[in-house]
Image (tube, rainbow, N blue to C red; front, side, top):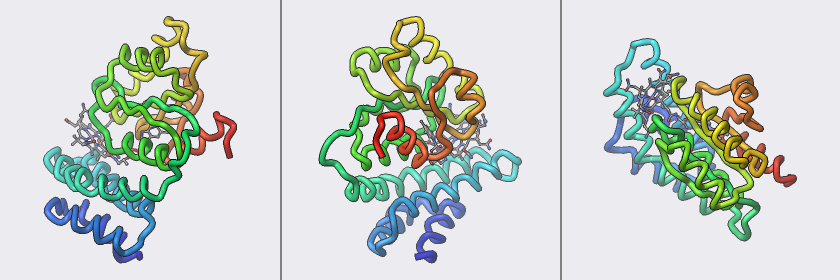
Length: 214
Ligand code: B12
């Protein structure tokens, strides 16, 4: 199994867009745990992101690596969903990446794992304006609002949304969880979120805890 996991990670590091779908299918056919497969892809993109951060790689490299993920993740996510428990809805989650931010891969992983765990997920997508989060909370009455932000600049948008909910008298109607690479527990506390998850599985655990589920 380690061989196919390394192959997934290396295809991100090698920007191997052409083989991405085929390798993802191969991984699924090999019987590997699809969550481990997703983690292998994540490890690869994190290395690329770090190298971009240190100036060793450039924006086109980031774009190519994310193209690999865009092709491989839907195949892996479909398998995670297939293996999930979809019998009944355990609760409703509204989810999105905040305004100004187009990173969707981590947000999609949170969405997939929540869905596979049995939650109804209303995914508002990327670059979601504060008013659209508010509208969804008002109209959908979710149990949980989950926000993702990958840029230091856009993480402040999570605070705007929470302030908007307070002003609209909706804050107490929903539990709010936040995540994304620049976020930590301290930031979550500072902006008045109810929880912070460093990973998608942590997010699922937190949602279950908030709803009194095991
Ligand atoms: C891929 C990528 C891109 C792709 C995005 C493609 C896409 N469709 O998403 C592209 C090339 C488009 C891109 C663009 C940019 N990017 Co970019 N990108 C990345 C990269 C390499 C990986 C992100 C990713 O997908 N990771 C894999 C997923 C699975 O991980 P994740 O998103 O962190 O999610 C996990 C957890 O954080 C958590 N999680 C995420 N959200 C949530 C939400 C909740 C509620 C919970 C509980 C958990 C949770 O669960 C996930 C899985 O366990 C990161 C590097 C990094 N280390 O994050 C840089 C990075 C985020 N990008 C960065 C930058 C600077 C940019 C640009 C500004 C570059 C530019 N000059 O144009 C633009 C901004 C565009 C915009 N307006 O949003 C910086 C941000 C620096 C900062 N702190 O502000 C980073 C950190 C790179 C770096 N080291 O400098 N990027």
